[in-house]
Length: 428
Image (tube, rainbow, N blue to C red; front, side, top):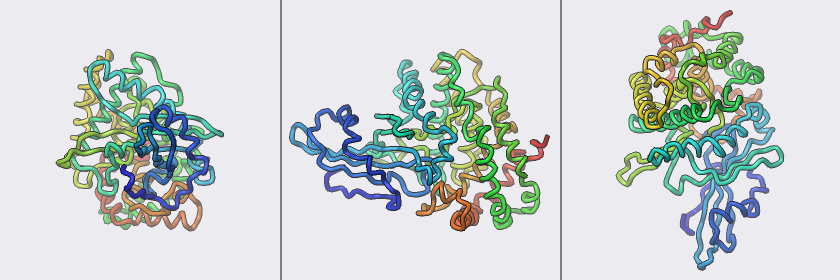
């Protein structure tokens, strides 16, 4: 960034804590820019627009530095911290997202990249984390700013084309392969990695969220233009079936091929940069708060439900699984996994296993209405989960969004016909 570049704040409504200041960054600057003499200017703005991240506060920090040689240099960093408790932070904290992410950036992600380096592959999975700390009960991260390398988020409302889907699935396979080999070399991951979106002790959060959306969702289903929409409404899960489906994710077969799933793998948790001709160059993963030791079906069902362009979603669904699997096998062979390599038919079987059906259903209940909703100042975790008139209004606007209905009129029957939405399977 040059000195003349204008700093743009993509979310003027975000309140920035005053303790995120020049003094807080002294240690990072001492290591990252040892030749600086002093800070000339310190500016903090939101890193992303509303609606792009719902579980944390993301800031971009601009620091203008005077260097030893008399030159002036501007550095930018990404600062990530927990939501204020009154803005949804208390619910988020119950999931233990930030302690898990701290372990990912401190230990596992560097180790995964090192596995590839050891076999001669220069492969980057995630941004470099420069600082992690716990302060007054909150966990904070300072990351390199990938925008300096011209990385950017893809447009979540449009979906990913074939080129971006292929690159994303390859990167997911690279990450998964390293996680499986690491576990084989070093033993099981900590117990908190056995749970992701579903935790046994947060039943109230899940049930309250389901009940909050149920009425509006059923109403919206009749507006999407689906043939036999009444049938789908009649077969919509009740509260007990939904919770049984949630718990089923924790009962999967441990003899299946397992990886450390990203857990929240969709387009906004990817960043990419491009060559001068506009073609896709590199792609990188971000946001490792929900990592879960389970079948790759978790990430695949999530990603394939949420991220492809509408015209690719159903047409290429099984092809996408093969694209992922082929790269997974290539990486597992290079990293010399000793266990039997997973077969494509077994992976497809896992994706139809009732233990993983929660992920596509949760995706279309929770994520997809948000993804297809344009950025809005009211789009926040707090507003979406609020039992207020404003919260109900926001949820109705999302579910009645024509872009959402246009996807769902084909996607819902597709998932239904695969048996993924057979909720009577969870009756006891």
